[in-house]
Structures are given as structure tokens and as C-alpha cells.
Length: 156
Image 1 (cartoon, rainbow, N blue to C red):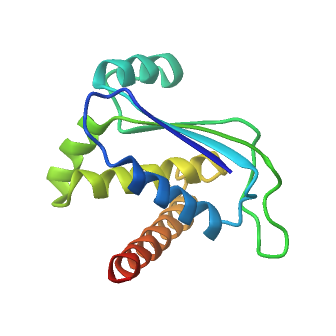
Image 2 (image 1 turned 60 degrees about the vertical axis):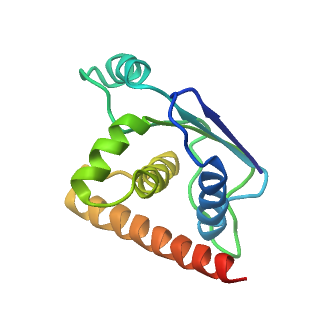
């Protein structure tokens, strides 16, 4: 599995934690170890340009996902086939503002946004109430599992 992380945002971000999160999430979602995903961190100007270009909406946003091979989550018996999941683009400056409003750290917000972006790559959406319940429930479960794994890792 190739997880490429590129930080062009100008903000110091602990990329090793993002990498561990992606490894955790992909394993939990039974995605093939031969699947590839890229995470790009950009500044507000670059994010705004992407937001206008792809969503036709003004201003920077927190996360954008660009799926490639339309892969879906697998199961333990039938993992997702190898392929290119796509790209997740994050804006740490927007994440920082949202984190302050939510009362948690910027890193926690980036973890949430990364998981959210991955779920979009895997075909999840939140346009309808039932879709939102499913996606946000899975997002919560993945993050709780990751935080538990991180606590175990720190104690070891």
C-alpha cells in the first residue's frame, strides 16, 4: 500500500500520525494492501482555487476528495481489490479555525477530515439523512478505534 503525504501548506503537521491513521482506517475498511492514496495539505489560496474549480463554491474549504478507481470498502473475506483510491486535499488553516470552534486540537480536526475524505474516496456521502448517519457513524467508529490504538501504542 502506498500512502503518499505531501505538505505544501506552510503549516507544521505531524505526518506520521496521518500515516498511522490512514493505515488504521484502510485496514479497518478491508482495503487491499496494494491500494494507493495520496494526502495533500495546501494553504488557503490553493484550497480556494480547488474549491472554485471543482465545486464551483467560493472560499477555501476544509477537505476535498478526488476518487479515482471508484473502490469500495471490502470485508475480511473479500478485501477491496488493488487500485488507486485517489487524493485527499486538506487545508490546515481551515482545520485550525474549525478545531478552535469545536474545542479540540488542530491535529484532531485533521484526523477527522482525513477519515472523512477517505470515506468519500470509498463512495460514502452525506447528502441524505440516512447516508449521513451511516457515514458519520463509521467516521466516529474509525476515529475512536484509532485513538484507542494510539493510546495502546504510547503505553507499549
